[in-house]
Each structure stands twice: as C-alpha cells, then as structure tokens.
Amino acid sequence: MNIIHPEILKSLKNYYTPGTRVVLVMMNDPYTKLQPGAKGTVTGVDDMGTIHVSWDSGSSLGVAYGEDSCKKIEE
Image 1 (cartoon, rainbow, N blue to C red):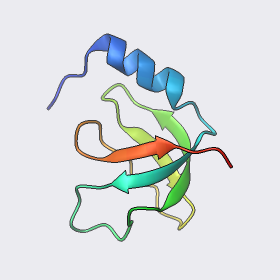
Image 2: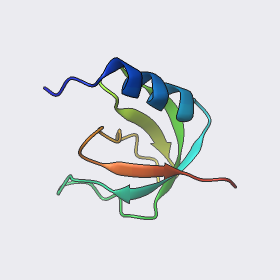
Image 3: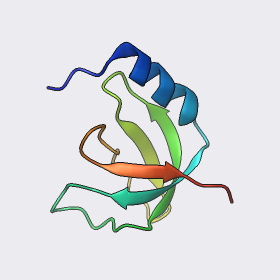
C-alpha cells in the first residue's frame, strides 16, 4: 500500500471536490471498459488519494493516485 503525503492528499481533496467534472486521461486497469476521454463527476477523495468518480457510462471505478490519471474539466 502506498502512503500519500498529507499535503498532497489535502491538495487533492481541495481540487477534486464533490461535483467536479473530470475526464479520464489514463487508467492502469486491463479489465475496465473505461477509456481515455470518458467523463464523470467526482463523488469524493478518500484517505489513500483515490478520486471516486460516478462515470457518465454508469461505472463508479475510482482513479487511483499514482496509477491512474484524470483531469478537471469545465463544462
């Protein structure tokens, strides 16, 4: 298990607040059907730095800190 620095965690929680829209950049999961460009809405960030997202496709797979990548979008 990777430990996230408290300041990085605080920054993630402040940047990816619930309701923030994001687009998937990359997911390091060979079994997911999510593809880069998928959009969703952040539901929260947990204490491991995982950004929990309700994807528009119906998936709720989280974006794992240090493994996956998403970015904030304005719609």
